[in-house]
Image (tube, rainbow, N blue to C red; front, side, top):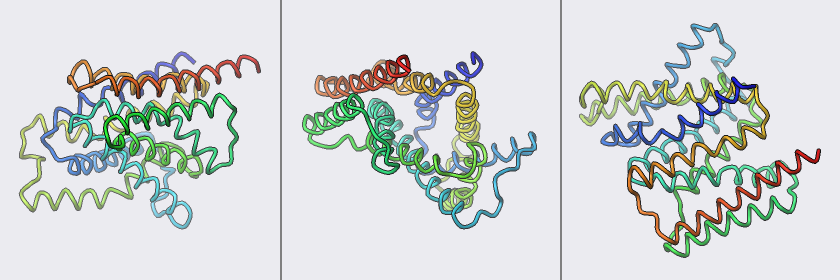
Length: 287
């Protein structure tokens, strides 16, 4: 169990520190970055599969498998693009809000789509989070759309993967495989148009673009391994490492503005998470 806990901490800490990585290549357009992230992730996963002999992902998916993983591929690419664009655009704090909200969005999807039932404290938590988003909208005159896109896209991705017939490694391999050719085609287009960064922006940038593959896949593999080793309740607590680190980076390192209105909105979301987490722990203790 200790090994699983450390794997989970490693995964969430890596995700929390992602802004430090993407900020190093912020001069590369977000869409091009995602193209490299997809392409090199697929190459990394194929290499791992070749070394370990893991070949469970279907090479020619059809029917339900193809439909499910095409949808999950679209959702994860939307999430990746929004995140990278937001980080490099100076919205690290708002990305953290998205991942603070995400667990509650997943719970709400469970109710609306899977027919799960919530207890009163869980409804209270969702209400507080919705109040936080509403307050931020009223205070700033616009929806915190970056946070909402991140939360809804990743929550939807989790919902789709819940019914998917493949495990984490094979599913990610298939997802990136479905996106590989479009990604490479777009990278080829940018190169032909004279806008490509790869091999033109210096060796440091090239290393980081290639490294986008391992940087993406390693935390996911750590997460998948941890999920099999430790209780879901512990995973639920540890998952807040990532948005907390992102929030601290945004405020303390990148000096993004964090005014009183944001503090009130975030406080409502944080309170929702405390209510949600405490209720879950108390219920587990009673059982």
